[in-house]
Length: 152
Image (tube, rainbow, N blue to C red; front, top):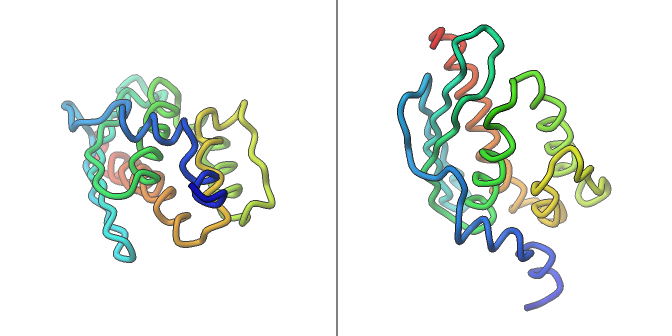
C-alpha cells in the first residue's frame, strides 16, 4: 500500500468499515434523511432520535451506508461519538472535526475531542475524500434540523 493510501486507510478506519458500530436502521426515530455524494456515489440513510426530556440528548443514530470505506467508517465513528451526548456537547466535536477536515492536513486534530475521528483526518489532504468523510456529518445536521422542525 502506498504511503498516501496507508494515511487514509488506517487500521482503525478498516476496523470501523468491517465492523461498523450502530449500523442498521432502527426505530423509534425523529427524522430520517438520505444523502448522496454525486461525485463518487456514496450514500447514507440516517435516522436520528433525540430524547424527549428537553435536554436534546442523542438517544440513537442509526444508518445504512453504501460507498467507500472512508464514508462507511466515518458514519460508524460519528454515530459512536454522538449517541448518549447532548447536541450542545457534540457541537465543539463537530466543529473541530469539520475544521480539521477542511484544513488540508494543517490541523492535526484533538483526539481527546474527536476520539476515533482522528483516524479519518488523513483524508483532509485529499479534497475528494473530504466529502466522503463529511457526508455522514452533513446527514446528521440535516436530521437534527428536521427533528427540531417536526418537534419529534
